[in-house]
Length: 521
Ligand code: KIV
Ligand code: ZN
Image (cartoon, rainbow, N blue to C red; front, side, top):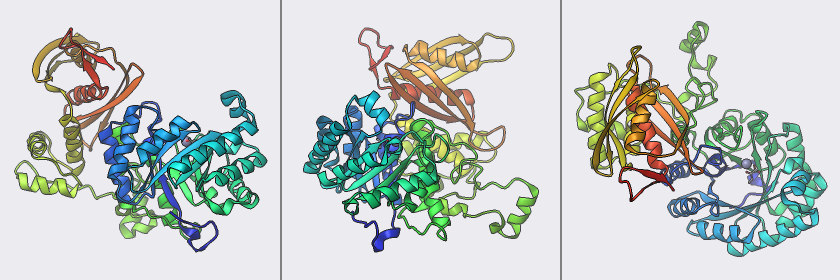
């Protein structure tokens, strides 16, 4: 990949997506291999230049995800993260070597506070580490990114020396992150201008921004860094990421596209994939998108007040600076009813971007018919929720078969649940403090486990009291976190499915002493 800092490609900005690495680092956002592959596929298809697929040394699962994504990538460069440690760099090189174009992204802290409290190293020692580790990475692969962690709190003189050392050792991209989300746009822009002016070999590398949103400035800072000469933006779908998150990819891309008059840059991302990517990431991570989130929020293109609606009817540009269809929002369409056939259903799935195998299609169709019987209007969103649910169930070894709940003021609330556990149908009943608690207790009595419930969230997929409920459940056990989703017009059935899906994802192992009991590994 080539782009000059000052040459004719000056306005091309590379988009580096780190949803699968920095995004997944948010507590509770861990994703399965299958989910990561789906997300990487859409990122590749939408034209993301570089996908940071994970942190290969972190676990075998992370290594496998990076290696699999590398094997499947078509256009994007696949990057893996590595600390400034030989073992990390070697493991990362192993994982990305399968890609048509792979990258090792290695980082070390440079700020005084990190050097003193985290690393207990002197500035000179860190310079030696940079030279040694970047050179090691460069011996494995030609595309090397080096990051100065906490760059925005690093004195400029030392940052210049560190950047020069990294480029001399072979780094081709230099990332200067605002790790703690502390910078303001003017400061961040100035830092890039200073570095590019003062580092003698600065013209040999592409500079990159990486901003966290602790003060809500991540997107503004990223664009300011580009104004200062950076030509790579690190960002995530939905702004997922550590603490308050990273700069949101969809906001960056649409700012560049919409305000070309003052942001004279181009990027290769096709925005029409963004809504789908956003839903995919929200589903996999369990981090719902806030309604008023720019670009991909449910209300981003909704016009409620009379005066706005009046303007919109006369000319959409009165209140809309972007067209919803440009970012992949389809007009909510009423789809087939209960008389629609399998063929029409299959066509609809295709239009929504799903291709299911025969068995999954049959089951999804059965559930669609069932839904059309119970729900007055079936919308695209209903079909999407149903199919996502079906895709997740397809890989589950443990499933909900039937649920009856006795609720109301009389108490105690009781759930009678039948589950398929490894091919065996087991029915149990349990009481609880409310119907959801009773349902989850019934699951626990069929599949004993010590996982702790850390999130329970319900959303209506569409309007109306007959809407499907989409439930997210997050469980924690043995240091692992997993999120499951379930959808149904019955909130309790959706809750049971979401809980069981999260349980399946925790990678539970059957204990030989008790066939019903599962233990987190
Ligand atoms: O925020 C940060 O500094 C990072 C680095 C690892 C690039 O995520
Ligand atoms: Zn980060």
